[in-house]
Structures are given as structure tokens and as C-alpha cells.
Amino acid sequence: MIKSLAYLGVNSPRTQDWRRFGTQFLGAELAEDGADGSVRLRVDDAAWRLQIHPAETDSVAYFGWAVDHEEDLDVVVRKLEAAGVRAVRGSDELAEQRNVNRLVTFTDPWGFPHEITWGQHFYPATFRPGRASSGFVTGSQGLGHVLLMMPDIEAGHAFFSGVLDFQLSDKIIVPGQLNARFYHVNARHHTLALGQCPPGVGVFNHLMLQVKSIDDVGTAYDMLDEMDVPLTLSLGRHTNDKTFSFYCATPSQFNIEIGYDGVEVGGDWVPYTYGTPAIWGHKLDPEAKNRPPGIVHQLAQ
Ligand SMILES: [Fe+2]
Image (cartoon, rainbow, N blue to C red; front, side):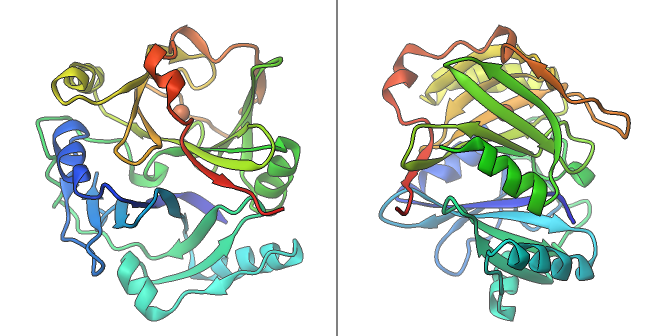
């Protein structure tokens, strides 16, 4: 079944802004542009991990999930079809564009586009960060984690846990304010988080990238001002995964969390419920209140 987040693709009118944001702020490396002029960013030895395609408006293009074995693709397809979700085998051309061996695509019940992939292409010992940094925690933990929001989190739980086998790590519930669930598929505390949002929309809120040094969090925090990157949540430490992090806006509406020191889960993990998301910090920036909570799309009626 799914073992990690392999990559993320978004459509955006601001692809060019990602060249500087990606390299100078995030410390990623530019890979060769995609065939459609997409900007492709590396954070490790994978061919690329983040791809920003040129488009008129911001939208999620795909969440790319990796399985370990080719036959696992068929297992995922069978589970999706049993749940009434149509999965389509991606063409060889699409697999080539994604730099994977094989993939299937599907859209979840909330309109988020997904790709299940096998055989992502790696080029060992080739990653060169875009600025001085210790690099990113990836490997078997994949690219990082994403937070998706939907109006009916119970149905979200039933789909991602029941059909796609994401394992519950814990919940954070602040009555009237926050209802979130966190899921692991490898040692990373969560690779997927779900949050409840108002009716009628789906939201891609953020991607978390985990850096190898606390100083890399501090350096990026310093660069917010220097590079005019809008802060979303101030420095803080999460209650559940204990990640020390801050959140900022990307050129494409969703946020990025730059994190350090997240806990790892093992076989004896017990899912707790927390009543607050942060031990300290993670205050919403006053200006962030005027921005959308991420890439928002309308749900089909
Ligand atoms: Fe996060």
C-alpha cells in the first residue's frame, strides 16, 4: 500500500516566482523545466519532488503517493474500485513526465487529484541545495506531509483510512475551532493530515518540509523579511508530532511548513487526542487572516 508522499504538483500563474522562492528561500534545487514549462524543484536525489505547472489560476495538479512494489498499484486500484472510485492507468508518456516507472490516477470524493506511483527515479549523490543548508529529511519518509481539508472529516477518515489504509497517528480537537486527524504510512509522524472546513469547498492547506537542522528553520525564518515571504503561523512546537516549525505562504496560495525535530512513529504507537495544536507559538499572523486558507476549490454538488 501507500508508503510515502512521492511528489506534489500544482498549477499556478506564478511559476516563475518559484525559481527564486524554491532555491533561495526553501533551499531546493532547480531541475530542468518540464515539457509544458513547469518549474521542477528537488529537495533530495529524486528527479524532482515539487512541480509547478503554468496555468491561469491556482489549483492542485496532483498529490503523488509512492508504493514500494509494482503489484501494490493493483491492490490500491482494487480497493478504490471496491469503494466506487475509478482509477485510471497513467500512460507511459505520463509516467515519463513524472519520472516514475508506472502510475495510476484518481480523483477522491472531494475533488483532490491523486497519483499512485511506483519506481520514482533517483540520482544518488546529485542533490545540491539552492542555498547553504543541511538538507531535508526524506528517504523512506518521503517528501513530507500535506494537510487537506474537507467539510465531512468522518467521511474523509473513512476514505483515507478505510480505503487507502493511512494509519491514524492522533487527533487534535478544539471544539468549535479545529477538528484534525493525522495519519502515517512510514516513520514520519504524519504524511497526511485531514482537517474539517466549511461546507462546499475542499482546501489544500499546506505542505511540510522537514529540515535536518534547527538552524535551517531559523535561517528560513530570517529570510521571510529579506524575501518578502508572508508569514502564516509564527514559530512554535506542535503538541502531537512535536515539530518545531513555522508556516509561510508560497507564491501559489498554499502554505509551506518548515519543520524540524518531528517524532517518529513505530509499531507500538498509540493514537492520542490533543486539545490544542501547539505547546507554544504557531500564532496566526494578523495579515494571514485576510488570505485564503490554502488552494480552495468548490465541491461538486
Ligand atoms: Fe503540518
